[in-house]
Length: 126
Image (cartoon, rainbow, N blue to C red; front, side, top):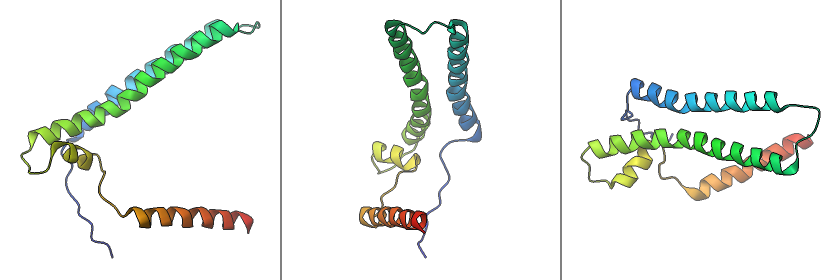
């Protein structure tokens, strides 16, 4: 059996809830605004290609900003936790550890992925 190393996370429940709110509220607001724009502009005449392209670009920019918040919040708390502790491990390595990234055997992981694909393929054929 593999020996697992369990540690406490360096952030609190309150920080987790604040991170969830800071990422979900802009996402929900964006979804409401975009759905409101779509219902107001829905008509029987199709959009011109130029207006459709402008709408797509604006939607893409807002989506990138909101989904970027889903990445910023965890990195913010991991960076804050890594800078508060005194450790001989480099801060960048500590941040990645706090986010759940650890060293692993790449060869065995790739072989398990390939075996999984083969198992799915065989199962579908059966």
